[in-house]
Image 1 (cartoon, rainbow, N blue to C red):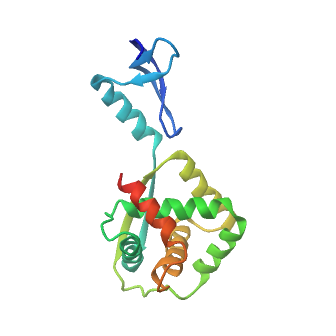
Image 2: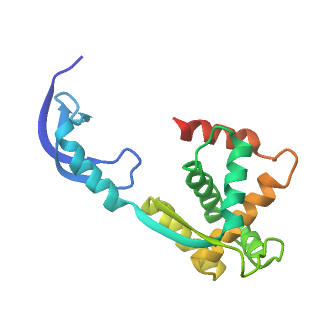
Image 3: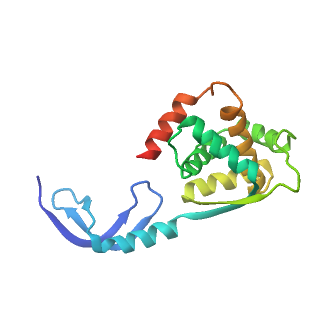
Length: 184
């Protein structure tokens, strides 16, 4: 056990996505590491976190949202709708890392497999993502030469192909671990 001193300092987010400037924090007297944030620092941390997150909003045909929900259910029947974001983030990150994945994604975007009529209701999908994930989406849109809505539709089509269509999804174990971590 070591002594701590409360002082004002800059505190980075644990995920590396940003920083809270000049906030009261408990700092270890030996190593200088932030070890505690008092309750009165919570509003400043929350405000900094919200500005660090970037909004993504797309208007999708309702079946695409239903595909996301079905995929989440197949992975973890106890998953909440919040798992949609985690699943999309996983696929966005996977696609951004691999040019072949982006090419495959473009194929899903162009396929008629998931085309829907104009009379199908649409739903808004709103996400707040880290700057890193936002940048990955921008990389995919630029590389695939598509707009954000088409990229998200292509990712949902990939999820449909990988998770919904097969009797046993190929990477189900990995996705179930992701769901368990996301659930806390």
